[in-house]
Image (cartoon, rainbow, N blue to C red; front, side, top):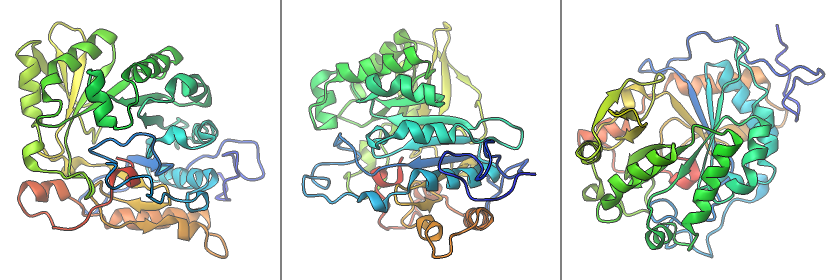
Length: 368
């Protein structure tokens, strides 16, 4: 049995050349509602080079906004320790997020360390990354070589002027498309593309977006505009329901439902009846999926959140940096303790008009 010694900086057991093996867990750790911990999303930075109006609007994240200093961020060693403990508790999917994760210097090194983690069955957890695509042409092959499995890229419009208005830094769409192709060439696929749909902004592009990415061979996922954080001016009237998105595409290109590929999958999947691919829709507003949510999130400064709409988290960084140094067993017990009492179901309460009226963590901080 593998010793529970601290993880060395290269992701292997301290004092050995073997990849670290996570603690045994066969069914996954249940929360207060019986939902197993399966997915961990890890934010590696709160910084982003875009100022998307639904995520990091310039009015809030302007030139004078104070981002975290380097010492406030979890180090790669700390991230690997947290991820290893989570895998030991049943997590089989790790997703790296931000901010924009490719802005974190040496990100390939972190991917390499995470890729060495193994489940009790000896398998590498699924390792994915969400990005705005701006640096993918430069980074894609190195990320693949380091052990990354897949990427998800955000593209909310096919119209150049509209795309630049949404990212609000005049970043050209062609460079994001080039990054997507670089990811596909490197084998980081199937590449998934996320499009947030907002009424009166890009809802007229539902079919064009579907057609474009179907032709390109990438999987498009439409996301309902969500009330994450408190700075994006969210209104229910701005939400285009997932059912409307499906009807709009189905009227032009007939669709049929596809079953979930894994427990707790957020997107409802639909395939084209002609066999030319599929789309996904994430209905976090009109079709709350709290009852099957298997995700926990770690912010860039090391706070553990059990809901995307949380307003507070458990401080793992403080625990990791405590005077005597926390053991792996203590870290695992802390994660387990937070998850076991988890009772979050914000979206279900919102749908029932019973959601608490409170501030929520910004998407750029918690990692989406």
